[in-house]
Image (tube, rainbow, N blue to C red; front, side, top):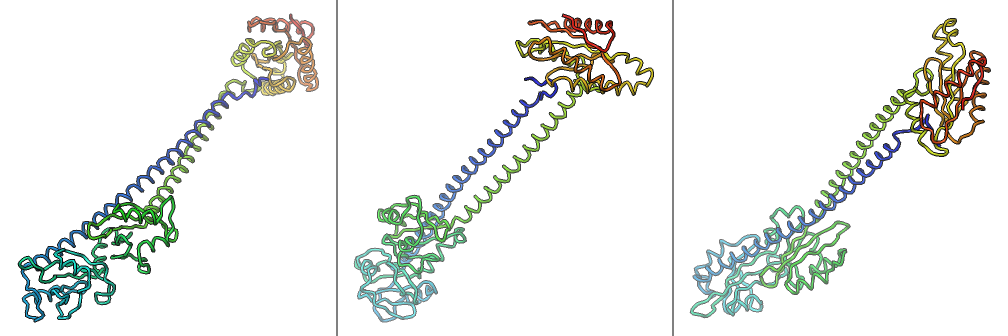
Length: 475
């Protein structure tokens, strides 16, 4: 049933507003989630690109160094005297100049005796790199364990050729630690490392934490692999000379490894990096996204509350404009709009009776007790009429001491009379004033507001003529 006195004209708007706000908040969350995932993908791709770029750089360093050393050895081999064990060869002084902490130079004769700058000798006749050099090949040795001043080392060797025959071998020996320092003097060094291993997994240049393992595969087997990654998969790719990535976890920290063929012997150059920086960036982005969502939600909620407050104040203002300032019942203008709209309804959804009420001898009250007392009487009249009718009925202050009541609902002739008696009884109990009431019924399909009101007014005058303090009915 319609409540004409408390009808909330803004509740649908508020619900729509709440729906829009919730949609906006969900949209912001969805956009931030999409943004975060896209940033995560971009960071992962960038990390992969940076790691490959670092590995390419390390590979270029390695190839350039080896090529440079080979070129130097070839130049030296082109003019040096073949070693004869006399110690009078012209190259002894040059050999001494290249003796360093991490490398040394040597010349081997046809019988496999290697002469070093400090006049030490060593039998290398059984070494693979020496035998290959005697066949006229440039060669690089496998890792020589503890062969270089107690350190692991590798040897670069080129043949010394005279008249088409190999007369000896010029060699440059490097400590693998020195090679590792050379490769890891890059921007990656603070976040990861570069290393070199053979297809079998032997580590030529190791990284921190791999010293206790015989091969790189042994090291990786001690790690945790996820997402279909595995050591076997990487080993199969290495055996085929393929490049690729491997992702594993060490003590819960994510690590990324990239490897590719070095183009030297069966060496593979690998670069690995801990993704702490990447994860730290993601954590910061996640925090910023959460802060943005929280801040946006708070601002939206504040905006909604402000809008609701404005709507509420507007509604209160509208209600005040609809009601008589003194008695709190509807004004004539507002009542006309409500009643004319209600008269268009059908069946039980329309007004069925109109009551016109006038306070008897109200002028005497004003003249005797003053207008303030008269205003108090009018306020009490409004309260009595509200108490004796239903919320869906429309009570109107028509002007001065005249009031009008429009009864809403099913047509029933006896009910308006019962309400009129209840009103007159309430006035009698108050003991201050009395009233006369005119009643008319609204015909089915009748919509003329003024015509109905005119009949009620005639009924009122009938009640007045009959002696006041009573009601009359005008059909």
